[in-house]
Image (cartoon, rainbow, N blue to C red):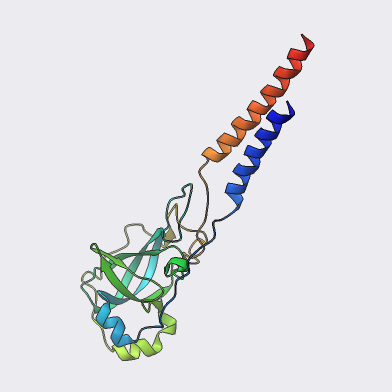
Length: 209
């Protein structure tokens, strides 16, 4: 009896450990240094300024990765390179540990340097993307830009929002990835507890027969 209960309690402890302990980032992103505006223009597929209207983080799963993508929707206000719509989407890794740009926040404006991968714009912490309010020098070097293709377009999601499934912080940046687990762990814990209770009373009744 004691051996069976010890096994059940060990399983419960393991499940709770999986829920509360976050896997450590083994590798960290390292940038050679912030690129110059000239370098950013040369190697980027798109350079633009825009306001974040929506962030959609990776769906919760058993094991989360710092490289999981965050989808960012921006209302483009000015363009220096590329042909962009008034509402443009890009992706970045959820954590800076995988070179993701984790400072995006709903309602904030950014100067974005983005590359193109499989037809999808992507940016990261090594590309030169930054808050527009801190990009005075870059804006001076870039000079006058041009408007996006459809400046009258409105966000299909309505008011600024963080979509369900987005990363923690509700618009405070996509950084700090959440290592949430599926509800199946809670179900498994309940099943183990029920099994333990049943085993206890079954053995107790058996002795009384």
